[in-house]
Amino acid sequence: MPYSGANDPSRVDWVDYADRVTQSDPATFLRTALAGMEDRAIWLVYDEGYVTVGSDCATMATELAVNRSKRVAVAAEHAYLIRFAPAR
Image (spheres, rainbow, N blue to C red):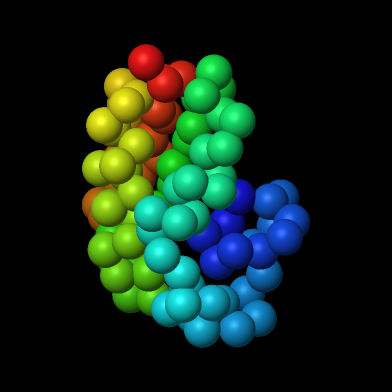
C-alpha cells in the first residue's frame, strides 16, 4: 500500500504525490494499513534520501517494530526493504 493514500495498493499514483504525502500522518496510515493484518507479515520499502516523505518511513519502521520482530532483507546506501513478522 503506497504511503500516499492511494486507493490501489498495487500502484503508486505519482500525480500530486508530494501534496498527498505532506498531508499524510504516519500513525493514521499505519492504523489503516494494518487493520486485520495481525497474522500477516508486513514489508516496508523506503529510501531515507527521499526528501518528500522526510522521516515518516523511519517513524513507521520504528512503530512497526514495537509489536513485530523485524529482519532487514536488503539495505543499500539509504534504501531499505524490511520484513516485519506477524504481530506478537
